[in-house]
Length: 484
Image 1 (cartoon, rainbow, N blue to C red):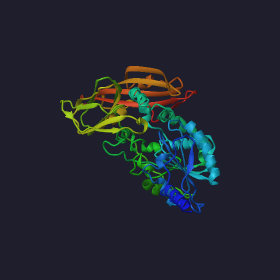
Image 2: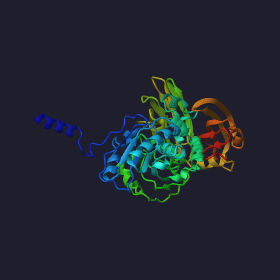
Image 3: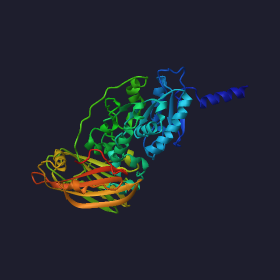
Image 4: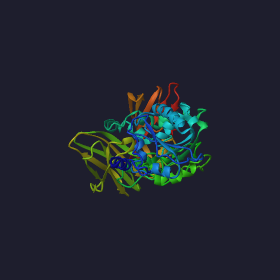
C-alpha cells in the first residue's frame, strides 16, 4: 500500500494536474498537432483557437518564453497547435494544414478560430481558399503576416545578397514565395477566388523595430524605406483590403506573438460575430545603397553621402561574427560604436555589425571588413534624406533637380527557385529605363537598379533599388509598386 501511495505521489509530481505544467510545443515534425490544457464546460460562444507558426518556426513559439497558451486557457478557450514545414511555400503548407484542420474540426466538433503568425497567415489562406478548409473555420486573425510579401525576401534573392543568402541557407521555397512579385501573383489569384469571401479576416500589425543592436534592428532600418514596420514585415503589407485591420501597436515581430502583450488586444475579436475598425496607411519613399559579395581577407566599399542628410545607418552582414569593421568619413575620421547581433527572419543564421551617424559629413565614405577566413557579406547603407523624393521623380520621368542620373540594371530570372538566367546593362538613363526593363519569359525576376548622379549643388549620390517581378505562363506581370 505504501509503495502504491509513493508511486501515485511521484506521478503527480511528474505530471501535475495544473495549467502551469503546460506544453513546450511539438518537436517540429510537419503535420503533428496537439491540443492544449482542457477547459471545463467550454462556452459555445468561444470557438477553439488553433495557433499556427510562421517562417523557420514550429509550435514551440507559442510556449518558449510565451504565455499565449496560458492566456487562452485562463480565458476559457480550448486550443490546438500544429507544426508545418518551416521552409516550404504556401502550396505545400496549405495542403498539409487543410488536412489537419479537418482532423481538429472532428476532434472539437465545431468551427475554430485560427491565429496565424507571420507566413503562417499565408499558409492559412492557401488552406482555406484552395483546399476548402474554410468550412472548418469561424474566422482568422493574422499577426504580422506579410500578405503582400517581404522586401527582405526580395533582398535575399538579389544579385548583391546572393552570396550571403546562399551560404547561410536562407534560399528556400518559403523565402522564395515571399518575394513581393510572387506574392502579388498569389494575391491576384487568391483574392479573386470565390472561397476567399467565405471567411472573415482580422489583421494585427506592429510598428516597433527594436533598439540599436537588437536582432530586428537591421531588418527594421532597411524596411523603414517602405514604411512603418515591425523589424521583419512592413505594416501596410500586413493588411488586407477586405479584412478588419486592428490599429497598429508598438510591437516588433517577436513581441506580437506574446500572450500577455497581444492576447488582450485580439481577445475582443474571438467571440463569434465581432468586428474591428479599419486603419489607413501612409506611403514613404526612401532608397538604400547596397553592395555584397565575397571577402577573402580585406574588403572595402565606398559610398557617397550628399548634403543635408539627417542620418545614415550602415550594416555589414556576414556569415561570420569575427570581422573587424571600420567606417571612415571623407576626412578620414573613424566612426566607432558598432553593435553586433545575429540576424533574424529571412536572414536568420547570419551576423550583422551596425552603426548610426547623425548629420554625416557629405562626401565619399568608406567601410571595410578584415577577416581571417573567407566571408560572404552584404553591405547596406540607409539614408534619412529629402533627396529620395527627387530620385522618385526622376525614375517616374518627372522633372527633378538631379543631373546626370545613370542606372546600372541587373536582372536574375528564376524558375522554381533555381537561377536560369542573368543579364546586366551598365548604363541606362532614366528616360530609357522602362524600355530596358522587359520581362518576356515566364519566371521570377530579381531586378537590381544601381543609381548614381549629381545633386543640384554638384554633390555625388548613390542609391540601390531592388524589386521582384513575377511573370506567369500567360505573360502577365505581377509586382508591388511598379516603376511607371
